Structure formats: C-alpha cells, structure tokens
Amino acid sequence: MTERPDMHEILGRLLGPADPEVGCDTCFEELDRYVELEVAGENADAAIPGLAAHLQGCPACHEEHESLLAFVRGE
Amino acid sequence: MQLPARERPIATAAGLDPESEAWLRDLRSDRTPGADARVRLHALLLRAARFEVSRRRSGHPYLGAEELEEIANEAADDALMSILRKLDEFRGLSRFTTWAYKFALYEAAVKMRQRAWRGRQVPLEPESWERFASTSLGLEADVEQRELLASIKTAISESLTPHQRRVLVALALDGVPIDVLAERLSTTRGALYKTLHDARVKLRRELEDQL
Image (cartoon, rainbow over all chains, first blue to last red; front, side):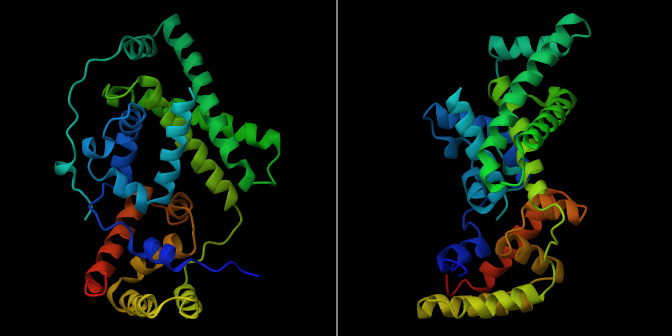
C-alpha cells in the first residue's frame, strides 16, 4: 500500500517559505558562521537574515545544515 | 522574496583565531608545512565525509562498505581541491575547520544523492503534475485544503512557464534531489533554486486570497 502524502507537507513543498530567503549560494557561504552561532547559543537567525527561511524551503541545504551542526556539536 | 546580494549581511574583516591563522599560513606554504597541512586537512575532511556517508547509508542498502569508503575518499579529495582553490575566500567568520568541514559534508551529500539516482529516470514530463493533482485531490483533506490544491493546480497550469513547471514538479513533488536535477539539466543548484523560488512566488501571488 502506498503511503499517503500529507497535505500540509505537500502544500509546504509547493509554496515554500513565506518569509524572504537567501539562495543556495549564499546559504553555503554563510552556513559555517550560522552553525557556530547556533552552537554558541547566539541568535543565528538575526545575524544572518533569510537563511532559516531558505533551510525551510531547500531540502538539500536543510540536510547539509543538519549534518554540519551535528558534526560540529560532536567534535 | 529572495534576498538580493546587496541586502545580505556584508562580511566584515574579523580577527582570525590562532588555529585558523596557522591553517592558512601552513596551507599557503610552498614548503614542507604546506604539504603536511594538506595531509592533515585531508584527514579531517575524510572524517567529515565518512560521517556524512554513514548518516546516509541506511538509504543506500545496496552500497557495500568498500563503495561507501570510496565515496568518502572522493568527497574528501574534491573538498580539499575546492578549499585550496577558495582559500582566499575564507573570511574568518568561523573557525577554519568548520568552514572546511562544510565542503566535505557537501561533497559527500551530493555524491550520495547522485548515487541514489544513478540509472534512474528523472520525471520531467508535464503529465507527472496532472497525475499528482488528480491523486492528491482524492486524499483525505478538509474542504479548504482541497480548494487550495485545486487553485494551485490551476495556477501551475496557467501562470508558470514550462521550465518553472518542470522544476517545481520534479523538486517539490517528485522528490528529485536538486543536485541530481542540476546535473541532468546541465545547470547549478543555485540557478535551479532560483527557478523554484520564482515559481513559488508566482503561486503565492496567485493564491494570496486563499493563504
């Protein structure tokens, strides 16, 4: 039996984040700084506007953010 | 809205921490310290690449230990090349190693995604959306959601360009990884995401009364 797609998730994937966002290139440029701010408990979203929205809209960048955060935290 | 470059935070010159400074100094050396630093950096990148490969291995049961190790090594090699090429772009806004790790994690992630789609056809035909819309509209959803989805269907058909439609359907509905689609369409992740973003903005504009 095929798993039913969740309607809320489908709408999210189609419409993306409502807030202004940076693109993938800027996300990659800023990701290391963003992660270090997060690890330090600082307000990464305020320091780098638009990155959190991009991570919400781009699954690939979202995965890479999760990985870098986990790797740096595990060091 | 995608933030234009001029509205992004401007990098300021930051004082480097001693460890990052040492990495830059050694990597820029043409003599023994340079070669040693490249070997040490490769070892760090390999550790990061193995971490990423390991996180993703459950999604690739057909890949053996040897093949996973090969992917990790290739990712570390490619990351090292990128880092050496972009050394002057390091702004000192994070530790050098954090900056370097992201290259290894990125390379490993891209290689694993591409491996998963090797030999698979990327659905790019417009019928894909038609099939999806008719199936989804039959799902258990409240009336409001069903109306919204029907409006999205109309907006996708009437407001998007054929390229925007193909990209939106492939990335947002068919779950094609953006790197895989970029490779198949001979473009970049950044350019594809811009297309996706523009398509989403159009949809939101068309649907503003319902959102």
